[in-house]
Image (cartoon, rainbow, N blue to C red; front, side):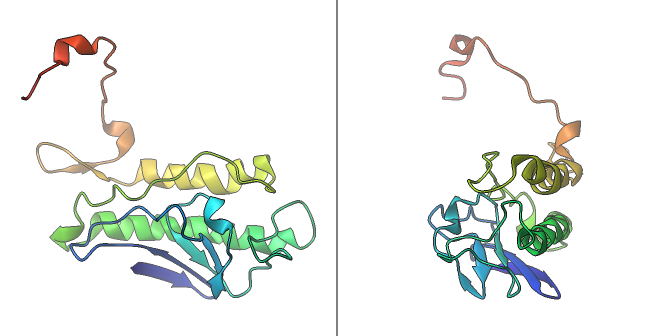
Length: 169
């Protein structure tokens, strides 16, 4: 695991022995209040988020994010988590350790809004800033060996794939 923290908040990414960032297992809880919140694996995020000041729901399966006075603290923690994610992503992509280079494929997330979460808040304060981080940091290695952000890369759209059948075999 590689982790970063800020006061009452820690986030971490699973990594292999070869320093490759791994995709978080789909059945692994995403949210922790020092212990895993069983059922929070449906809260799609590329890293684990732990805070001992999260306010869990009654079933301890997630944190309270529906509009209420109690959700304000949890939302503030998750908003800080996006900032820490940016820091962690920046560290991994700019690390002088050559093993970290081009090793960010495990940093994936879903655009699905988790149940029990205000969609507008989730998109504005959590999902969109996280996507902005991914797009702003140079994570793509070019053929010349330089790193560039995703928005500087031209990715072709291929409509007629029959031309490519057998290519490279």
